[in-house]
Length: 273
Image 1 (tube, rainbow, N blue to C red):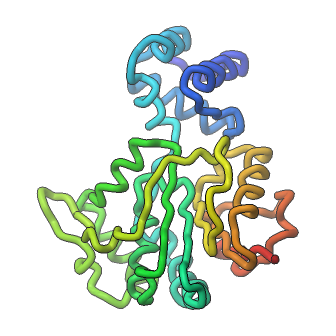
Image 2: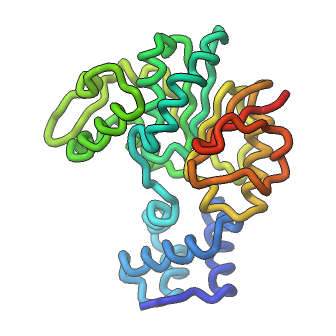
């Protein structure tokens, strides 16, 4: 079993992925990406890097399977409840002054944080005035997100998160249950638009009052973080908000001086002008 990937082999793998499939992972943190590739090799019984390269080049569907492993899909509803409480109490009331509120969830994975945002907006009476753009580079994630389905066993934890985030309703009002699946009510998803977008290669596509990109930066190197924050700056309206994950930072980012910190604990920033 492969335990380590030599820098030359790693570079060659990324080159194959970029040239064959158009996905550029050269700006990702090598340590975590190598770890996920090794884990994928164990999953698919690839005994060597040469076999992995061969299957990437010649086996139909193999890359999409690998993509599920090398992209990070860990998420949950109302993750970090204090963040959602601050959104509910301070940020969303300020967004209410806009006639149309445009929000971008970049790197939305399977959509749990997008659903959380929709619930906050619905409870604030704003969902009908909102357009929520939910993007991810992984198409399989987007298909799952659009389904509005998740395992019933996680709903107890999500309910606790919702309560800690200041939830005012019975959380079970937002979903029905069928075959051990929780299915979000379709009306909750009515103003959400899911589509594929690559933070590495794609450009600005709208002007937003709020951008959420939580727990994605930690997998990027500094150059890619600089690039993506510049993309977000260009995508925000004047005085628009940017929310990162609570373990992420803009401390050393080139665009740092163009933002003011609204919450250092919850990593909420606002574009200065």
